[in-house]
Image 1: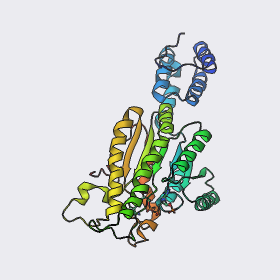
Image 2 (image 1 turned 90 degrees about the vertical axis):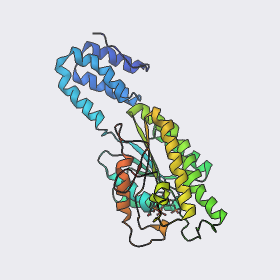
Image 3 (image 1 turned 30 degrees about the horizontal axis):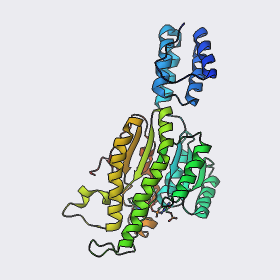
Image 4 (image 1 turned 90 degrees about the horizontal axis):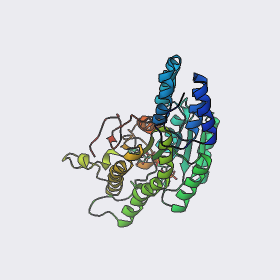
Length: 325
Ligand SMILES: NC(=O)c1ccc[n+]([C@@H]2O[C@H](COP(=O)([O-])OP(=O)(O)OC[C@H]3O[C@@H](n4cnc5c(N)ncnc54)[C@H](OP(=O)(O)O)[C@@H]3O)[C@@H](O)[C@H]2O)c1
């Protein structure tokens, strides 16, 4: 039997042997081993289907198990490598916990600018049995720190990252943020973290996300936003909370999210902005009345774990509904 390959990747000597074996013995175990080898080499799901289709067509006996293999890949039950910035506390920390608890056994990088706070957070999650959480030092405003984190994850995870959650943020709510009297240094500091920091972190990790998308068919960037970043929402006559430094920096990040979506759609990388909604946290000086940190993280969870069929280029509210930019 001759196996036709509609894929354009090159076969390694190991996979070449497997291709020969499968052509001589086209049964399900041979196909499974071949698929496993090819996936480890980063061959995408679509290519794997193209690869196995000719074998299936010529061997009706393997059709039923093939359906299972297909479902296995499509349900994206495979474990992912995930990075959450600003995750030593708040919504980011709770998101790391929720992600690490998933049965798929994701590897979740808990990033923190302060090493002792990050290590402490990792210790707490390890004590809960979540040994798949790994602390990494990452200050989004420091290029050297971002670069070092990218190098470390690249080395430890075979060059790939499936999901980047840009969660780190500051609000400087204790400062005057009126449109006419805000101090420029307050604006600058907020922009530094919420906008420049988010951009430089994203750009550092895009090569790793591209590599992941090449292998599995998709990767994800989730930018944690706020309804106060929506120009449409804030322009309503009845809108309040014009916290100028915070809102403009988050609006800039939203605008960047749109550009990023356009640029990365050809690579299969999903890019969305999601707001957890009002959540009582350090960011708002623990203002009462918000949802719990865990509930805030729950709003983000499905958007971190999108698969190939998930949405991209959208802004979602705390209920998972599309929200105006
Ligand atoms: N809370 C809300 O009502 C609400 C609503 C909408 C959106 N959000 C968004 O949700 C995200 C998380 O906020 P949160 O409410 O969980 O607040 P939080 O508890 O203050 O968490 C913010 C996290 O970001 C980290 N961070 C700040 N500057 C950083 C930097 N330069 N590099 C790396 N990490 C940095 C903080 O680290 P340190 O501990 O070292 O300061 C902290 O871990 C933010 O993007 C925020 O804008 C929050």
